[in-house]
Image (cartoon, rainbow over all chains, first blue to last red; front, side, top):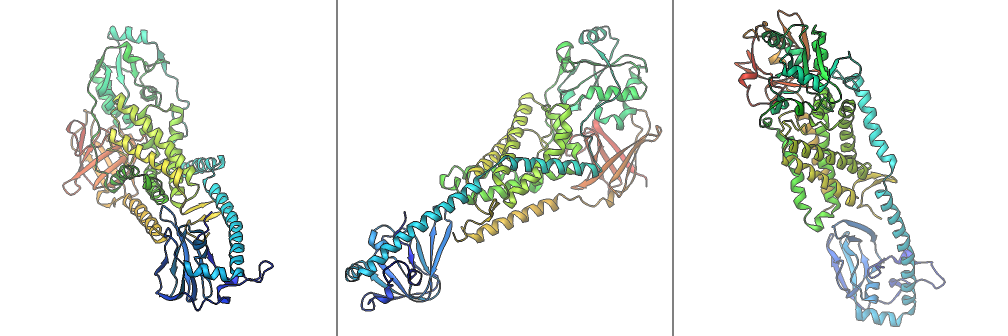
Length: 490
Length: 125
């Protein structure tokens, strides 16, 4: 229990207990001590110093405060004329546990340890009063400690409701916005649609060997360039509406008629490009279009394939948003310093930075969800039924969690959400790198961001920032029990 | 560190957020609004006509085929970005005072327009 530097106000002490309370002003102290003047703002007593003197405020006002290890100042009280402080530190001999500064131009009487001992010996009422005050402070200290513990528990408390709040808000915003968005997405891609003739791998291979098949790769160009069936034409399903006359011209050149057998492949778990293109061709009058069944992704094991090295997309200059993404890496270096790593101020900086980054990430995805859905498809980790739902809801989760971080609402839960997203991005990026996918990251901008290990590192740094927030955030927080500004008087 | 520092950091964060949000706003479309026609017939199937409207909508049609596809479009860093409903972005590079457009049909971002994937258009209206 810190007791060496508890401030005392003689007027507060009056009327408590059976003995008539006596303050120093009631004692004959004018004959001892030295009168000292302190200009406003000057430090009279410094926390941690060894106690040598006891002080009585003669004129003016002093402020008593504590500084935590992280440098957080907590104002304890103000003392006016007649109040005294420093007596307990002298009694116990402990270092001072608070600092005192002059709140205005102040005059004090400084009484040395020896003088104070004499004063106590000669004044048993003063000794009794000090014991009584010490007891009172112990009780008050326990109450304050309890209040602080409850307060800290409330700040650090997380509940399922918090997760439901962020997830629920994200889904509601996503669905409502999608209703009114010009670029709205169907909630589930490829539901229904005309049935397409299915062919087995063996049948397809047999027809291929007999050179009776027109083989078409429906994937995006980058994937087709990486690996395709020998002799296949690449008609990107995503360009069908724009480029069908060009596709038609190529089919005519190959003497493919409306009833020729056409084998379309290139479906992935995230998007059945083969089915999409087959239906588009059927809608244009091609009658004999076939796709693979459940083994739609096994074509590369059954057909002779042509492989080419992956060609990464060109990198685009992303401007300020791109620069912003580098800051987490420098934060990561700061975190190597233990005292900084635990700082709540670092938490606040991390919250603002992550909030800004994720809001920035979210905006273009919200406005043009189809672009983001195509990014999700490129990673080939999400089942096709979930791609559009994911593409609609995730950006709103980024926006809501980012706003919560900046505004200080449910920050630990928001940090868990953003950390979870980082983990998913890291998994997606590492998988794409290891598989050699020629895809755009879809991280900051809509295009022009190659997938590389730097992107992974940046996401790892952001993940560490969320961990830091989770453990050490306690400043500027709007949470249960109201707004918490750590520096307010406790 | 004290309250003032926190306030400064908060203000800086908000300023950064605002600048990023404002920075991501699209540039004016007006200089590019018009009708463009491909310089050459494409794959022997005739010319393509591209109409960019001021309201952010665009039409892409094969002149002799009579069918058109609709886009959204915006301008970023002096280049036109066409958004298909499939989620593909087509980057268009204007030249010669916006009289000519080079349309990159690769669906990826490139510094210029790759020759083998490039369709050139000239403004006709």
